[in-house]
Image (cartoon, rainbow, N blue to C red; front, side, top):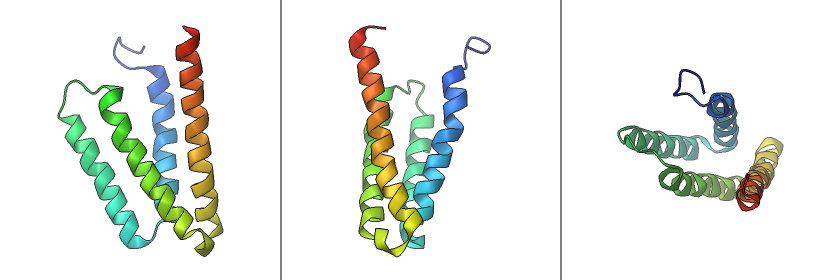
Length: 109
């Protein structure tokens, strides 16, 4: 913790999340990108007004946004190689992260 408030993990991983969002958005068409980014920004603004921002409130919407973007990228994946790579890497990376969290939770550490 930095200053008793800021988690070092969040501080380090937040730029990685921003990079992942930028990569996902870069693979979408212009119209889809604006809609996806507007949904992400709107959700972020709505959650920012809440002083109790727990994982159980944030995770479902983010998983749905990533899943929808992944479906759009796979549909249009033949259009660009980068879009296809992001579409395939995003769910695999998410699954690995969720497996690590589940493993740690189940082991009791």
